Amino acid sequence: MNPEEFNTKEEVTWCPGCGNHSIFMALKQALVNLNIAPDQVIIAYGIGCHGHEVNYLRTNGFEGLHGRPVPVAEGIKLANNELNVIAVSGDGDAYGEGLSHMINAARGNHNVTYLVHDNRVYGLTTGQTSPTSAKGTKSKSTPEGAIDEPINPMAMAIAAGATFVARTFAGNIQLTTELIMQAIKHNGFALLDILQPCVSFNKVNNFQWYMEHTYKLENHNPADKVAALQKALEMEKLPLGVLYKEEKPSYEEQVSELSEGPLTKKSLEVDKEKIMEEFL
Ligand SMILES: Cc1ncc(C[n+]2csc(CCOP(=O)(O)OP(=O)(O)O)c2C)c(N)n1
Ligand code: SF4
Image (cartoon, rainbow, N blue to C red; front, side):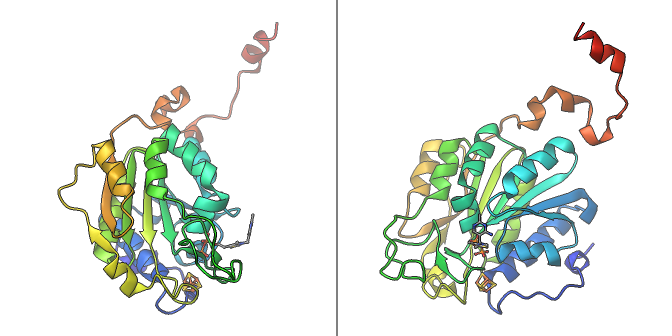
């Protein structure tokens, strides 16, 4: 397959210059590189500009409630653990409305790839501050500047027990493709925070800003949790790459019912008499 074969016929309506375009390209390329056909992957989307991807990407897809792509993805993976299951979210969706889902998915090590389009604003609703907005950010919802400190998704995911924690910048399509591939291949909960310019509503964290405030991780041991946390706490320049990685059985591998194959392949026939015996 080639990436174009993953396009639907829908017109892409993201603003010209939006980071969503490059994340979309990287995701398609990653699926092609991994030889994953459209029917072998399902993506649960949150609500926001990122979620419009459900209309543009020709895979199985489910757009649910704001902040809820992770529990949808967990349910799908439990029902059919042969599928590659991805959840796509925005920073508002993931770290605002949906934060507790990420923490619980991480501690359970659910085998879900979590791609967060992090543009530091609520994009679709025209630029209110989000949990990753810098303190002092002025927006329609914070005209005098945000009082809250921004959340640290990398440190939070590591502390919650996520077994793959990485960050990339949408402007670097090659790195983003590579990290999406690694996240999909990882057996367990994989968070990839994708720094993404929102050209319409975030005039500070633009392409240039990210070029100046990020660097690619080198000589870092992702198996070292303390070193990973130290990297996650770096704020002046944000490290890009795999901060933390650990091999551990996934949630689904520990569910005994799934050892014989996916639930979707099980017969729906039930032995009613055997079930009734339990009540006698
Ligand atoms: C529970 C709930 N709260 C608020 C909304 C309104 N709403 C829809 S999209 C959105 C912003 C999404 O922002 P983000 O998740 O950062 O995604 P982006 O649009 O930036 O990709 C909001 C607040 C909603 N649909 N449901
Ligand atoms: S509003 Fe921002 S995030 Fe949404 S499509 Fe436009 S540039 Fe992208």
